[in-house]
Image (tube, rainbow over all chains, first blue to last red; front, side, top):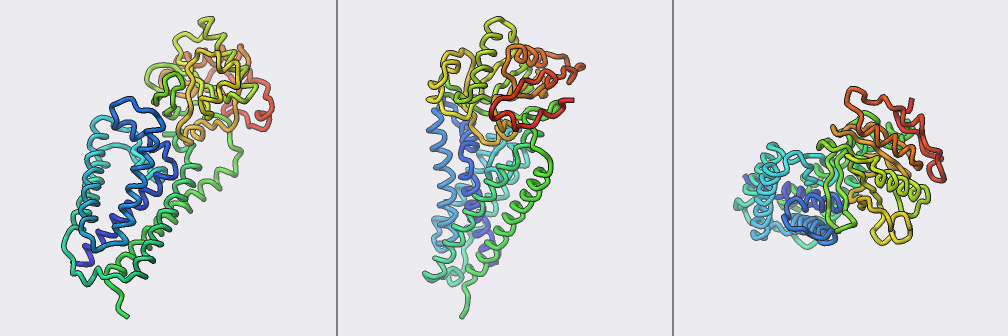
Amino acid sequence: MDVLVLCAKTAVACLLIVAGGAKLADPASFASTVRLFIPLRVAWPLLSAIAVGVSLGELAVGMASLTLPAIMALDVLVFAIACVFVAVSAVGYAFHRGRSCRCFGALSQRKFDAAGVLRGAVIAGVAAVALTHVNAAALQLDATARVLLFSAAALLALAAFTAARARGAGSGREVAAQ
Amino acid sequence: MKVPLYLAVAQWTLLFAFGLLLIVVFRQLGRTLRKDDAVAPLGPEVGSKAASLEYSRFADDTVQYLAPGDGQPTLLAFVEPTCPSCEKLVLALGTAEHAGELSGLRVLLLTSSPKSYLKVSDAFRATRLECGRILARTTTQAYGATSTPLLVAIDRDGVVRAAAPAIELAEVRTFGRACLLPAAERGSIPITAAAPKRENDLEAAAPAPGAD
């Protein structure tokens, strides 16, 4: 059971890191999605700042969750973020169906649709599993392990950023064909 | 030394995440290498569905969403204030618009330059046509706007009817007509036969697909 919970915990953390890193590769695209959820007329620089803030927030929470597994509050925060994903997917499905959600930047061409709401619910479900109590001994990490995990998380974010950049640069024609 | 369970699980999860990203990068690399075998065309493919796009409108600094196929024919001009040929195109578009030759069309000037750059060009400063800055890099790629000026005629169904560099008023008129062609006559205007002479950066660009 502990393995399952820890798998859920690390999987959601990695998901947040990849999503944050990929979004940072093209914040302008993500800002246009953010605009869909802001009913007021907002200046572009502010939208850009919000988009970068959301991306950095995802990245920070993901890295913290991966590096500091014993802090329960982080698990709750991750679950809350997952619930926000579900809400955003549902609102996007209701009001902006068919528009690109850019949830993973250029890594994914997913749109706001019913499957997106389901995916959000699955992520929230996995995050809920991660809330389950785990034997404290399993979460004991020394400083070296934490540093290594943090480095791996940073590398993962960089890899996601690079992959999103590469895919964004090469997928123009695919976008045209949609 | 006993490894904590969390560390072991995290290692495997990270390994899977890196593996997935590696697959994404290699798939993209494969696509890119395949594309490089052919000469990249200038402009979107005639007959293809035009991509939706977002731009920041200079007039009021608001973000606008353009969805080709919303029932309104659209003439898109990819231009830069620092490009002399683009100035000619903007002047030609303004003349045609003023003469009512583009009535019923949505004419949009798109640039990758910030608003402050418009000051360097008399034509851009004076134009009354809607002008905006492209927000996402993918828009330029989707439209194959590898050099400017590039004019793209999109009909009411959102289908690209013509795409080529253009400068002269006559070419603007031809593109305007292409936007309004009925669906049955799709592709019947040989836009690139009347293709503009290319200047400077356009000389190296390939002709638009469907030129023949």
